[in-house]
Image (cartoon, helix red, strand yellow):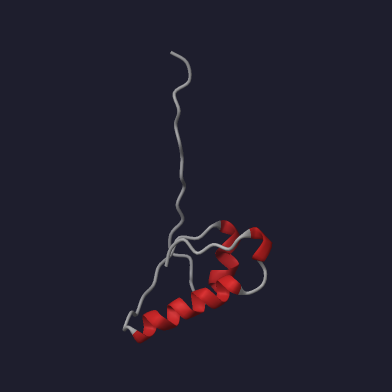
Length: 68
């Protein structure tokens, strides 16, 4: 699963949970046995409630050369 997001005005209404549950059901019916995703820190509790467990943390860094 990737790029599940909810517009701020519609958050906290269960929409991401409903969409994610449907995707997981569809995948299960299709025979998929394992699902991974990347999550924002804010969404970790949502995915934990759905049964996902943290298995890897990623640090994203950027570099921009300043000056000559």
